[in-house]
Length: 209
Image (cartoon, rainbow, N blue to C red; front, top):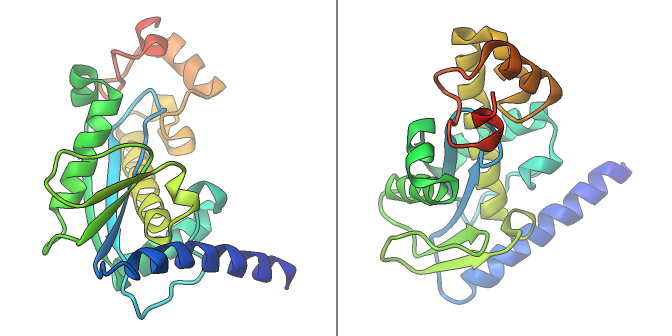
């Protein structure tokens, strides 16, 4: 029971933030977040989510605070009940334009997938995408805004599924376990086998192998 109450308060705090934005006259509020800036391999994925005003999806929180099983459950609920746009930038694009610019491009693509466009975009972090729309960058937004938290879940689950798919192609690296992050197992595999085709060749930890 205590766990449920703590969850509920956190959810209500996130919802209150979005309600305060809605009280300014914005109806279609999109949360925008990305997943995958830190890994050594694979794409960076972004999600844009517009949650319906009259529907509650209990349990939404910053994806980092949720178990993989709970993220999967909420991912399905969000896809069924909300408007969702997903965009990504692959490893080659990351190597070409750097990870920050690739992340912003992925965010832009996720937003472009929403039709019609939102009235306002709440972006996780002190960033703005190159689109002519009302935007607010919110530092640690995934722990403040319900719609950004929902976007963090979608981006994380979608990317995790991609990395599990890549694991079937390149099983030696264990992408299904660490999702490309620099774990001990991953670094040992890099040292043994060298980079795979989806490794980010511009990252120092990959260049050194």
